Length: 317
Image (cartoon, one colour):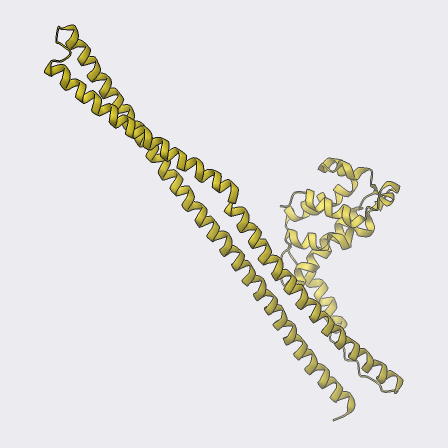
């Protein structure tokens, strides 16, 4: 087996290994993100459950107070009725120490004691509710839970960032070795066989397929709105951009935005264009088609920023 064949074999093996390593790294990062999100959601969920228990307890106490107040009102009405009966007996000539009047006095006294006990219980329940609300405001478990959840996600982000940096360094080292190999091959006069991966006919055929990707009328309108917003920003509630744009995109911008969106959909293996395809290619298509004014350049506003504002403002179908 020749040197070129051996090198190609090693290169292909390295690509396979590198691909597997990248996939494993991506899986590891996704797993860490999912684990952190799950932990954060559990913290929020536990706090919500605890908060709900407090709410349930407060609602039960409030309902109890309402019931006691109703009972107190009924007892007051009954006591008033007995007092009215006592007054009538006295008007009819019954003595205050008569058995009939004494009997009514005993009943009135019982109701008065019952009402007093009920009022004491109402005050106690209201005091508990007030104190619970004060303690809740002081501690605010949901705020603490959100802070804890944010800390978990932040820690996970730092760990993931560390993994990405380490992976990036490893990738740089691999690229360095690859470049050294290229240098050695060139200074030694060794010829490397270049193999085409596509024929011209394949590219032409792909272009024809791209033209067959379905572009809905709503997507056409979306593209037209985006390009028109570069010319007449005030019509799209973007008055602040009018002084920043010297000239906007021409009809060629609309044409190329539609073609690029179709191509992007084709790359994503879809036979139709969606708004995300248009947004994905909008900056590359429109960046050089927007002329900036002196005011924009003086304030360091870029055409990319203008395109982003337009994409965020124009209604998505």
